[in-house]
Amino acid sequence: MYSNFVKHLQRIHRSDYEQVFGKNAPSPNANSVTDDQSAVELTKINKKQNEFGLLVTKNLIIQCNLPLNTVEQPGFRRFLKDCNLKLEPISSKRIKHVIIPSVKIDLVNKIHHALNGVDALSVTVDAWSNKCLSIFFRLHMAFS
Image (cartoon, rainbow, N blue to C red; front, side):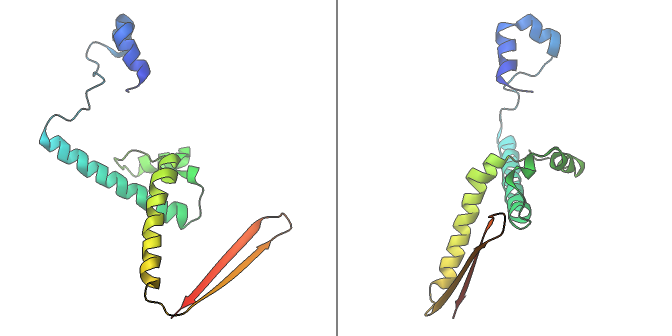
């Protein structure tokens, strides 16, 4: 457990810190990378963590049309724990501010690449609402 509170206890209230955590408690800098092999392992973990975040975003959030906070629900966290994945849980803020923009950029590039040599493009837009005033929108594009 590393937080500002623990650091404060360790620095200012040393006796309370030792009483709670014991004398062999790890220091706040215990996770620091000290050699090249650890750096390589950390890079692999970061790569797997990024791939995991991308997969969760694409396959669960986007494909299944789930809310972003699904990844912060206790059931989802328990599922990850039961799967014995040694990855940090992903946050909805990371999905919103990091992963979705990168997925959007990839998608825009794919669309641009597909439409780059198109001579004719037909676009149909449908928009409607229901009795509860929920708005629906459909975009259909055909090109040759």
